[in-house]
View (tube, rainbow, N blue to C red):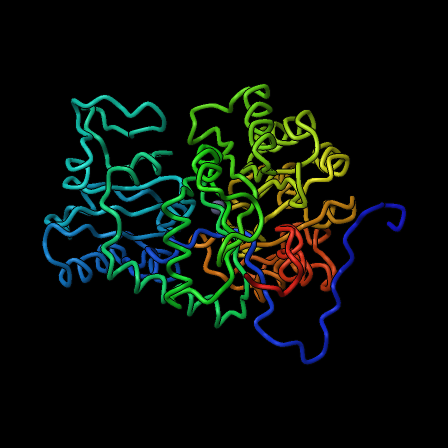
Length: 424
Ligand SMILES: [Zn+2]
């Protein structure tokens, strides 16, 4: 192991170190704020369609008719199926309703909401994503990979709800001992940057923020004189690129991704590439390999890298990029992985141990609102690899404790090119 050069060293926790000390290196602040003021439909609160309906009925009773109701985190595996618009209509016919799947990459709308966003039996599908339809051609309510399209059509959260949501998000983060978060939302634009900066000035958010702008917004940032590194009361991080076969219909070609990385580099940015499936991870690795090293102190990073067979671990070792990943997925989805993924592929799922032994630097995040931030549980899961049912998934891929702690503390400063503990 000592033969591997340039491996970051575990950071020993000093006795009596001041808290907060954790870093959540991948989350989505505004979506978390929205989840915290919406109807809670994630397990363990909701484990059946009737309990989901009861929650929604109660929420609708307290909201003026016509006001959007949003919920986050329903789990089709736990529920046995996706809810339909009829399930939602039965308890909230007078409010437009959008419930987001726990992955953040699918939504269910009720009939009123479908009508408001312009989806019907007669309307064409949006260019990307999938509208599930019944045999008559009527939308069932389930929309796959249409999150950005929906975000553009739904009203933004009312100001009071936004403020309350940010307050709750900050309370959750600080009580978990988190000092710094990285907001890795692919739709991060200049307006969101200003909004989060405002929330910091107002004291609504006291955690430090590394803001990763979406790849399509770099020109706007450049024109506003903003570059990677400290920028006012936030830090600007890597440019976020989303590689997802389910939301884009297919993966782009490698030349297209190389071009995006090269353009980002030309403007001074390293990149953070969202890649979950092994095909996407392979594409990210190949594109980064061809595009060459980052232009400044921030390294390139791959987000999630969920499926990582040995040849990709090897390729990552050669690349020198970071992997920013999510141990809590093993905790919350471990039982589902074991039930749905073939046994020969399970060892390649979040192979933290193999990545670390190969010398690939790791940082951890919750991907909130996908999971709620809980670094202590994340660290424990990275070591023991146990799901909520207590069954471990490939325990040989567990990390030593000090490495797991490092990935949720010092690593989160280092991957942003920041000096540890120094907030802007
Ligand atoms: Zn994410």
